[in-house]
Image (cartoon, rainbow, N blue to C red; front, side, top):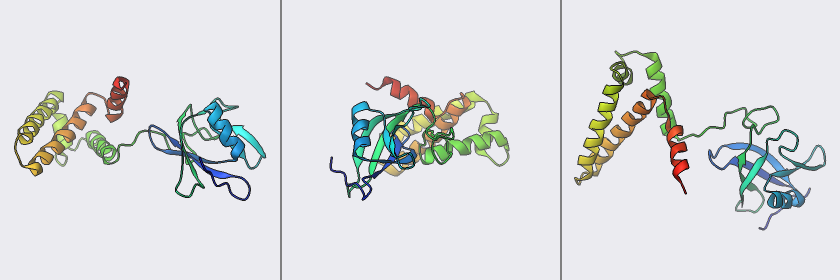
Length: 197
């Protein structure tokens, strides 16, 4: 791999969780740190303050296990995907921005949060989610069944717009059912990962 080190012999290394895709930290590598990372499969940096190599986790045990290294289009920045063991930041947080390193499913995570908020608010007059939850898990499960049937019917027709509409209804109600059972998309992800060969 061609790497363009700066005038100090360093290259920035962006550390990203290979699963969640969250950025965990930024460090710097010289050629020796890069080669040691490749050899040991533990991310090693060059400390600009200590003027020496340091393997992340050498004291704390919170290693960054190497999954993949990519170079950017100019060959002057590395993207290093890792499996972190414990918190990444020296302050004890998951990343150097103080954020939790959890899976994010984009708008689906937003939707899960809205469902949670409406369930907790319990305003059945203003919220469809709250009113359906107030009727109990059997009604939520029944609604998922109804939406599944409607999705299947639309799948056999030629109206893609209606198929997508019913598919969205099904997914929305399924997210509600997951929460009614005390689960989230993260639990489904873990189940599917366990099946993946």
